[in-house]
Amino acid sequence: MKLSELGQAGPVYAAAALFEIAGCFALWAILRLNRSVLWAIPGVVSLVLFAVLLTRIDLSLAGRAYAAYGGIYILASLAWLWAIEGQAPDRWDVIGAGLCLAGAVIILLGHRAPSV
Image 1 (cartoon, rainbow, N blue to C red):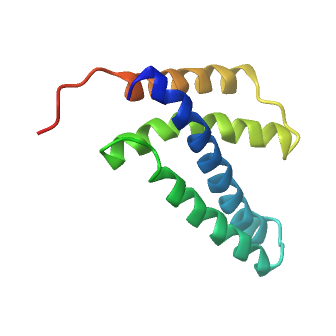
Image 2 (cartoon, rainbow, N blue to C red):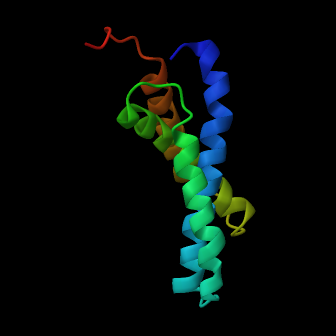
């Protein structure tokens, strides 16, 4: 992936993370917060949208798209922690997320030999 393409992938990764976290949180709400099983409906829809969005990343190998997504997911999870659950990330959260984001950028922008 080229640096110019990273700007297009970023919003797709961010939307995928939002849908994945929302879908997983719906099940968390059912199983841990005793919410209605009806929370599963938007949860499943969110998880399907998450999966569809990851197919929109312009990489030829799914594993690489998923690996790079991991860094974005961690950042989005910490944003969820802060915005939805009301707990500010601590310095270790921020340092860890920074390292993961650096890894995601390396995965996305690293020069590779042409695939066979």
